[in-house]
Length: 86
Image (tube, rainbow, N blue to C red; front, side):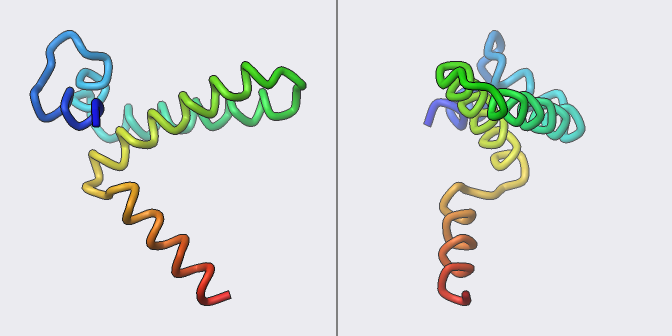
């Protein structure tokens, strides 16, 4: 995965790595900003912009998950457990 590689290899000119190194507050802030932008686009009819904002949110969320030591598979397991228990 490129996100992990850029962080683990400490790629200096990488936005991903710079954001990761900026700390938890900045990463969480970016996830929040992207979530708001996705909500705004969801209310409009531009599918292209909606997809772009969804991609931005997912990208920033993946960086935050990496910082928290949580994998996407961990999140999938939570969702699977919820589906089983309901």
